[in-house]
Amino acid sequence: MSPEQTACEDIIVDLKAFERRLTEVIQCLQPATYRWRIVLLVVSICVAAGAGQWLMDPTTRIVPLTQSLSNHPFFLIATILLVFIFLMGVHKRVIAASIITSRTRDVLCDFNMSCDDTENLETQLEMFIENVRQIHIIVSDFQPQSQNVLNQKLQSLVHGLQEVDKLKSQVQDVHVPLEVFDYIDQGRNPQLYTKDCIEKALAKNEQVKGKIDAYRKFKANMLLELSRVFPAELNKYRAIRGDE
Image 1 (cartoon, helix red, strand yellow):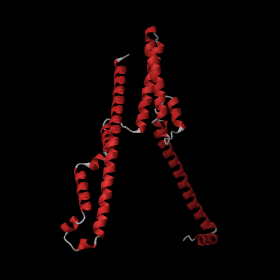
Image 2 (image 1 turned 60 degrees about the horizontal axis):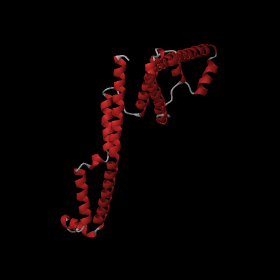
Image 3 (image 1 turned 90 degrees about the vertical axis):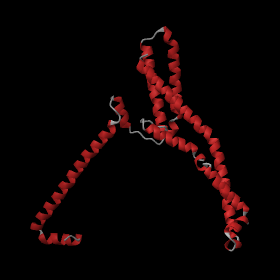
């Protein structure tokens, strides 16, 4: 195996390890995130209930603020608790997983990478293609001592197909034109399909624009000749159409 292939495999392994570690971190944060959300919800409900009682109390507008708050200790304690948990950063804890995912996505964008479902599928397909290429190399110059390596590559190939099958539900809304597969079969870059479509649309637009201009000139010339031959009839025609 060449050094380039070894480096490529090392990069893929590192990316998979990073993905697994990121998934583990987010999963570990989920229970704590749910607990903090419950705490914030309960305290907010208590503050809302206490505020309602405090505002509905007829003596609130008469007595001083300190005395009105002392008359409603439930509202006072709930408000202090709400301020305290906000100072403790509860607003960050309830969305900790989302913050980590967003910041990771921003960092990966600097390296032309992503952590969405489409990128996961692309990574799996790249690994699958690399496994097929390595199997081709092993089989084309097969040696008995390469049997174990070949078995491992075949197992990786089956595992890769299983991973691709798991990701199919995440890209069901992605529609690929059939012409793209023709480009791939012809050995052409599938990204050229978009370029060719734009060029065809521009050419069609110029063609249609030319026809429209020709029809406009034909109409103008025909009206000019009709005004000379049938002026009365043309005036009636224009009157019916409302043309000047």
